[in-house]
Amino acid sequence: MPTSHHDSQLRYILKLTRFGVVKWRRTADHNETFKTTVRNIFVATVWEDRASRYFRLQGSDGCAQKVVSSADSEVVDALFSQAKRRAFNLYGAIAKIGRLDS
Image (cartoon, rainbow, N blue to C red; front, side, top):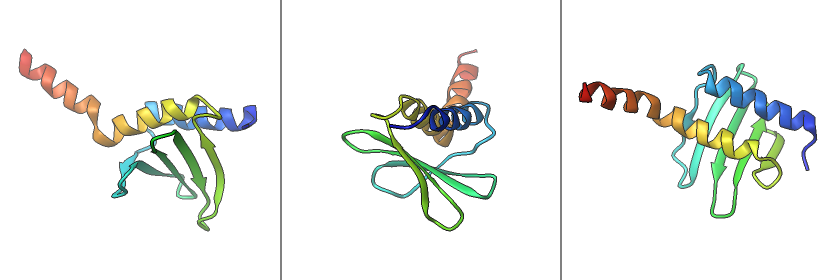
């Protein structure tokens, strides 16, 4: 079970994602997988499988520093959803559709 410190770190990355500071990209993995680089030091990855959604934070050495599932924290679900929206640029696509209706 993650501590409140881990939960606050996830919320911080979620906040940066919502404000567009963190740029997510989709990987070529067969699962829904999205990656971003945080301050050129860490690589954050979110993905889902049939059972859950997951968050992994890796250092520059490639070793996982934190792995959290949606069963451990509800923030992982929100972070996955935001990363997916940002990677597919759903906000921009919806805005273009809205302009066509005008």
